[in-house]
Image 1 (cartoon, helix red, strand yellow):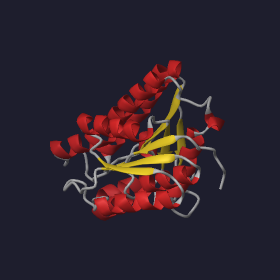
Image 2 (tube, rainbow, N blue to C red; image 1 turned 60 degrees about the vertical axis):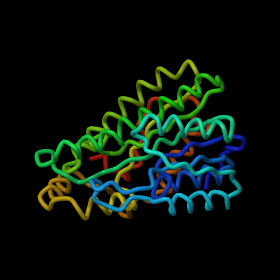
Image 3 (cartoon, rainbow, N blue to C red; image 1 turned 120 degrees about the vertical axis):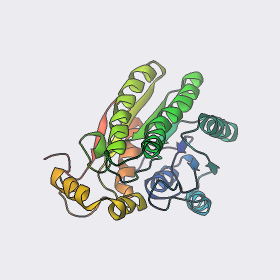
Image 4 (cartoon, rainbow, N blue to C red; image 1 turned 30 degrees about the vertical axis):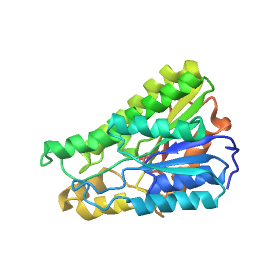
Length: 270
């Protein structure tokens, strides 16, 4: 494992109860950062799969503490500005600052665009795009006011780069995340805050399992025809995505901003 020095840094991680978010939180802790681990801790009926709960968020907190980090768990909904503002205020109250935002929380209810109802569209866009903006807004405001720079890393997807049949709402949101990332990179550059996006292919998480279980057979066939999830064989693991987050959060990437970094195992190469 590459060693990064995040001592005296504070990382704010969304969607940290399980999956990629938990992996990111634990990796920041392993590299010396203190961690604010956040999650909504409830399942929305539209998600189509079981989401992380309070017990799992507490487990993330304990696992990060075992790595030697000071850790706070905060239950919040990234699509609600009041929740996000409160979470950022709690982090600053606890640690005095936020140096890194791992803007990770997301949902992917499988549905075709022609059959999808308005509520499902709104749910996906609220969490996957509005939630990204709200977290970047309030952490970015803190970083700009503090005046000591910072790192924001947004979770997009290969669905932010190419079409993903059966996930049109998710695809639209993840394309939007890339536009958000590029614009924030320019607007926050005067404050020495870098903003980048990571674009994973399918990752071995409950969310991907839910998509596979719930997607319509015809849409699944279209998705298979549109391109591979992975040309290297084994499914990508959460820690593979965390490795990209660690680099983009580090001083080694201090002049990298506004990019979309695929962790795609070749899926975007064809």
